[in-house]
Length: 306
Ligand SMILES: *Cc1c(COP(=O)(O)O)cnc(C)c1O
Image (cartoon, rainbow, N blue to C red; front, top):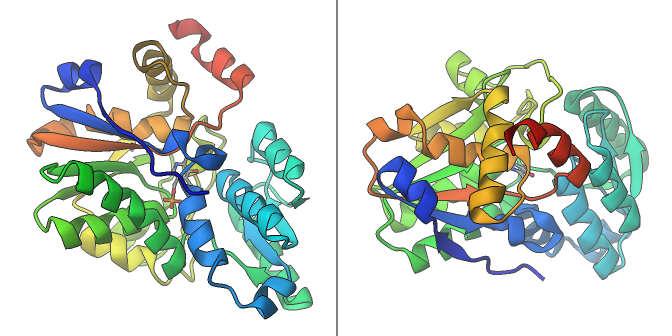
C-alpha cells in the first residue's frame, strides 16, 4: 500500500537555484501525502487487543486520512479529531474512508486535549501524528529511498511542523551520509518547533489560519522525541512567509505539472532561499510532502499568479 515514490530531477528549479534540485514526490504517495508511511508503521505493529479498542488520531488532515485509509483496510474502528482549521476537502476524504470525524475547537492543541479526554474515558489506542518512534521511523523511509537512488546528494530540505517527517529523514539520512545537511521549512507565523528550539524546551504557540494548514501548530508541551531529534540533527530551519506560498504553488503547477498543497511547497521555497544558498549545496533533495489542496482553494489562491 505504501508506494516507493519517484525522485525526479527538476530542471526549472535547478536553473533558478544554481545547483541541482531533485524532488521526492510524496504528493504521489497513496492518500496524497507521506503520512501513510508513519501511520502504517505504527498501526501494523499494534496488538490485536490495541486494535480491538479502536484507534484515535489528532490531525490537521493528512495524518487522519492515512489512519482512516489503513483502518478501513484492516477492519479497525478509527476516530479522527480535527479542529476548525482542518480544510473541508480533508474532512470529506476521512469521512469517505469511514472514519468517525470529531470536530473540536479552533486549534490543534484543543483537539489534542479533547482526544486525551476520549482516550482516558474510552481506552482508545492513540496513533500520534508525529511524536512516536514508529511514526518517525516510517517517515524516515523517504530518506532511505531517496539516498539509495541518489547517494551523493548533500542536502535534504523538508517541511517541518511537529517534526515527525524531519526527525525520520534526519536520522535515516545522517546514518547513511553523516555529512549531509538537513534543512527544515516552517511557516514564519508561529513555527512551533523553531520557537521551542529558541526557548530550549517545547513551548506553546498560537495557531493561525494558513494556506499551509498542514504545517501550522505546536509540538506539544509533553513532546518526547521530535524536539530532541530535531535539536540535535537539523542543520538549519528556513522560515517561509504566507505571501510566498501561492505564487510558488502556481509556478510549480505550471513548470512541474503538479498541484501540491501549501505546506508542501515550503520545501521548494526554502531550497531557493538565500539561507540555503549560503550553505552552498551541490545536489539537494526537496521533499514534496503532499498534494491535498482542493481545486477551489488552489484556484482562489493562485488566480492572481496564473
Ligand atoms: C504533516 C505534514 C507535514 C509536516 O510533518 P510533521 O511530521 O508534522 O513535521 C508537512 N507536509 C504535509 C503535507 C503534511 O501533511
